[in-house]
Length: 245
Image (cartoon, rainbow, N blue to C red):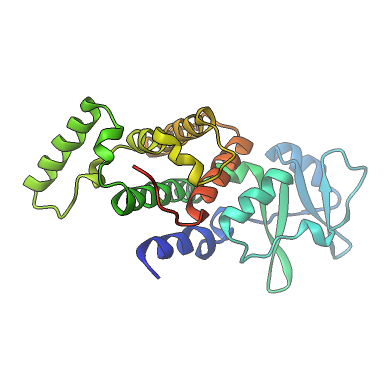
């Protein structure tokens, strides 16, 4: 297992849903509506004569919690993200009892932002490795201005005694330029068009910047972020093929 595999394992399997879940509040059957309104809750768990039942805004009364409303506590965070896009909330069991709740609102918490940023970093690392392996003359694929910028950063880092190469000094936008040349992106998926590839790489760059600067609004819907994640996975999972100069 190389460093990229270990990072991927961390972000896709080892971080589970629990860091974004909330401890469950159980309401009394005589006051749950008032408590929900006070807290602006859309869902609640109600103790009905000693039995835990769920109530969602719009329901006539509390009903039993169905199995499909329960998410295992070990669910990887990025899988939980996709599940919450399809369904607004899930309950989580602990020691055989409903003890936590996770909702779509929780998607904006720091752990998931770290997960998004981690996947983007994985993509960046992966593309740079492909450049080193297959594109020895990659300098011809970016503008002289961008190349000079990379060289300036390289010389600065060398002055700090960092063990680094010129590829490591490329900006994320440079990677999109390199793989858009000669339709190299089609090695990832033959169905890609240049416009789609460039747009997705630009979107990833914008999302990366928003995450890095801790912006409250990431600028994309959860569905759009899900599409970005799928795009990243396609590239990372693509069969390692020789790229042409």
